[in-house]
Length: 177
Image (cartoon, rainbow, N blue to C red; front, top):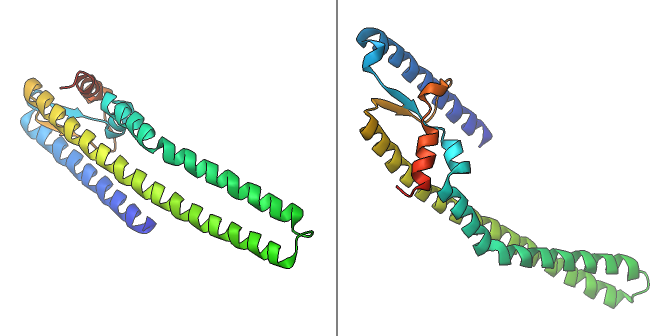
């Protein structure tokens, strides 16, 4: 999986480099004044936009009770484990086995709940991100049309701050456009 991600990143890097080279050739052929290029930092949109912050708060509200329940169960398991370690030598064999089984069941249940929590949270986070990026794409297209951009990139090996329109996109998202 990690090797696949490296190959995917290398391919993205190569693609971005190719696009940049093609743009350089196009600028040379057509003239720099005729082409208007912009850049949007997708990570900033994900971290700093008003819809992303609202989604984060919504996810905290939605998943907070489950997170608290997991913490409560983890504390119970630790307490049970400490009791077993402390009182294990004084308990009868049957009582000790019963406590060990109880601890094992609680641990298995906790791990299952934790796994389900992570899966559900990741699924909801991905849904919220998809919604965010759909809105951001609409805003970017509106800015591109209004300001007559020829090309807006979302990934680049290098970018000049003068072509970065991320702040405008963040502002438009905050205004609910």
